[in-house]
Image (cartoon, rainbow, N blue to C red; front, side):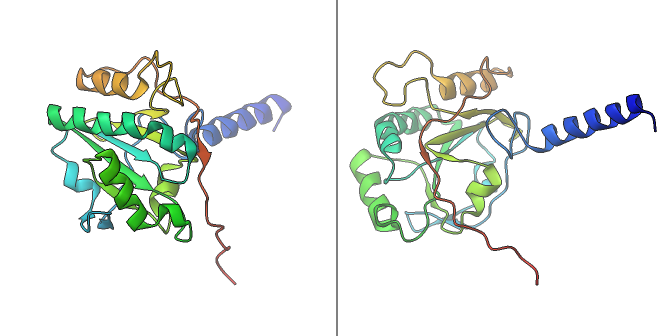
Length: 209
């Protein structure tokens, strides 16, 4: 194999690797990817939820959040408002997922219940103590949002808006993505670098002997 052909092979492998690594800021998912499936995941309301439970909704928004992150706390009121807006519209669903390890006291189920009541959360709040869901989504921050269209293909991932503290919001990334998806269009912004606390990933031991 001559040098030119070798270079082409290397470029091809790099391109393939780029596809496999996901989007700009996510090593797992990129716009256009299918929503990772989940089944019978417990939530703070005592029920269990699966992705299929929301098949009648035109839009599905998934947010990874928790009590113990300052950035997540800053978005709570806006998150509650988004839940109420979706409830009124009737064709969109909002799902929250807590990816914190079981030993984080502020993120224990009873503490999440208290916060949900305090803030008026009207959406399912799933528990992910094994971190399977957050790993499948490739989320690395709290809060981090994912918007899926009717076909459950990813149309947007990243921040709720352009103001982490919520004081000077000029761009509503999630709501703009929802509106675009409902209109059968791609949003102007498909990815933003998530701003928030790092997800406390549990170290995985290598399998095998």
